[in-house]
Image (cartoon, rainbow, N blue to C red; front, side, top):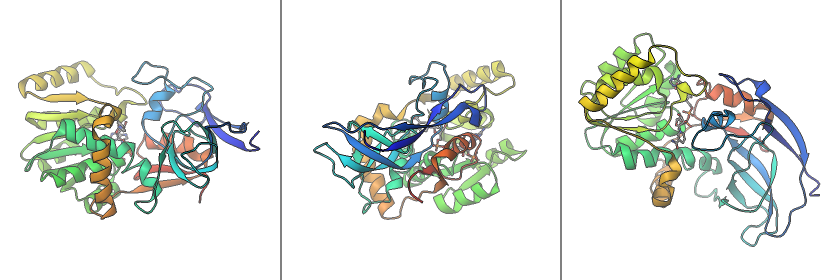
Length: 342
Ligand code: NDP
C-alpha cells in the first residue's frame, strides 16, 4: 500500500433534471503502492466543466456515461508525490485526468508537464486548457471571423465565451457578449473588451440584442441554446457561421415551449439565409491545432494581451455544489476546486 487514503466523489445515482447533492457520494479509498511505470499524484486543483452533467446521465452521447458508483470524471492539476516513471520526478506539476479525488495513481498516459514560469498552472484548466482550446478551434475551423463581422457569444464571462470574444476582436470583428446579470455583463465588457454585452435575464433581452447588432450577426458561437438561440436566429445574416459548441440551457432538462415551431423556424432560416451550423467536440481538432493554440494563445496570455478570470471554491467536498451551480450560472469565470491547496 502507498499508505495514502484518498478521498473521492462517485456518482451515487443519475439525476432526473437538476442534479442534487444526493446524486454524489464521498468515499475514502486506500491507494495501492505504485508499480514500475506509475506515479502517485496529489490533486491540487480540479476543473469543473459543463460536460460533467452529460456523463451523469445514462443517455447515449459522444462519450460513455459514468457508471453509477463510478468515480466522477475530471481533469486536474496535480503534483507528483512519487514516481517510478522515467519521464517524471517527484515535485513535477502535471495536467492529469485525476477524476474527483484527492490523490490518484497514474500510468502517465495523457499527462502534460506544466511550467509555472510561463503561466499560472491553473490556466491549464481554463484559458490554456480544454475550454480555451474549444474557443480557439471552434473560431478557427468554423466561426472564421473576419474584419468588420459581428460575432456573438453567450456565457461571455466563462472560459470559452471570454476567449471567443477576444479572438473575435483580434480578427478585427465586433464582439457582442451575452451574460447573466448586470455584474457579469459589466465585467465582460471591461475585462474582455466586448463592444457590447447584453443580459439574457432582462425581460427585453431579444430586443436589446437586436439593438446592439444593427448589421445582423455573422458568427454566432453557440454555447447555450434555448431562449438565447431563439433571440439570435432572426438576426443571423446570409452565410452566417454557427459553431455549435454547447447547449448548456438544455443540460438539466429540455426547455418547455413549442419546440416544433422553433425547429421549423430554425430550418427555414438555415435554408433561407444559407447558414452553416457545425457541431463539434474540441478533441476533433486537437491533432491539427493544439500546438498553434498553445503558441498563439499561450504567448498572448503571457503578454497580458489575452485576459481570463478564474473562480475558486475550496475543498473537494464542495465540488457537487459547484457543478450544480455552474449549470445555473452561479460561477463567475473558470470554475476550479482547490483540492489540496489553499
Ligand atoms: P462557463 O464557465 O461559462 O459556465 C457556464 C455558463 O453558462 C454559466 O456561468 C452561465 O453564464 C451560462 N448559462 C447557464 N445556463 C444558461 C442559460 N439557461 N442561458 C444562458 N446562459 C446560461 O462554461 P464553459 O465556458 O466551460 O462552457 C461554455 C459552453 O461550452 C458550455 O455549453 C459547454 O458545454 C461548452 N463546451 C463545449 C466543448 C466542446 O468540445 N464542444 C468543450 C468545452 C465546453 P451566465 O450566468 O452568464 O448566463
